Length: 219
Image 1 (cartoon, rainbow, N blue to C red):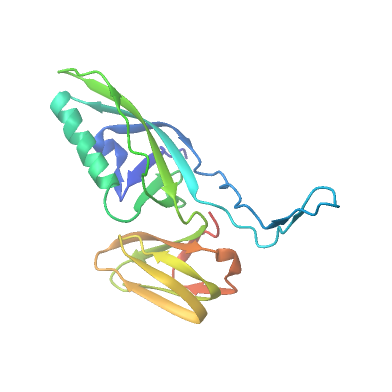
Image 2 (image 1 turned 30 degrees about the vertical axis):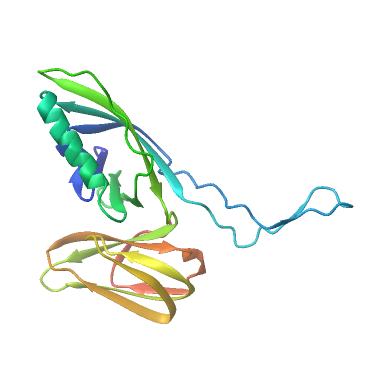
């Protein structure tokens, strides 16, 4: 069954603001490798490069957007609302639904601003813009937890000597999680399905268990 591609910002459909995405870039790309340690010996060809424990930089996401409204005032109101949501403190959650059970999840922010190309009209008014987003923690594991009458608390237990950040999917997060068999929990106040992001050097996690379902082992 085909699924309509949907884009959400903090759980709000882009279409609620009259915003449609015509093209996306960077969402499945592997971010650029951080410069590894190098030694250049004068009496040797080339260079010696340490390629153990490779690490990548931030993810860059580009969304080419088209926006439509019923006039100048409606256009300005919807645009301001969209940009206000994008400009809230901390990272904002970008969700791309490519499959009902396996959405793509990103914790992003906008640094470069947004420039709108438009023509003012009193009837149907449209504009275009390119949304450039950065994801500072680009390597992550995605989990799913459903809060119902019986299950209200998500639990994750990890062993890792490097810290990870857990984004619980309701706008809260737990930072600097590390250690041996370290357990973190979160209680949800409202019913629904939440997507939990465990971000960091997940390759160095030596044990992992949770009462959440794994959606993407690595994204």
